[in-house]
Length: 202
Image 1: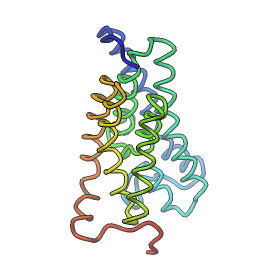
Image 2: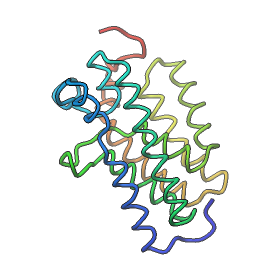
Image 3: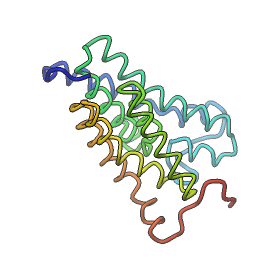
């Protein structure tokens, strides 16, 4: 995808575009619209689909997951159309940063897995496929969603580099570092053996 370094002005514009889209807090908007109050006041306080699921509204959780992914996809595709292909990684980084650190919510956002996947789909479907295969394999073997996401994100920059996407690989490296930082509580629970497994009750 990357053939030349994007001019810094276009890169900043793509980053800003991505941030604006990524910072839309769909989980908060959907739960408030459904009369459930502030999603940040329950569970982990996160605005993502996992915490929305704690309201018992699976439909809202699914909608949050899809919309959080699509805002990453939309950011990259719009940047491709407006600024050209070399600006796409900057837009992906902006969307991810917007989701993690939305200015509207005091820079306290979600953990970013859905938006990460949405960005991957638009950046390179082959890398998204690698992410999906790794996620499914680790999830099936361990029954830990967080571990699957961490492992899949770790391999995504390598997958991007292997198909020649240097700028995409660099952007994904940043996103992966941030994703791991946001998952520090999950990592601690995984190490302690207290992380909830997929399908576990309670």
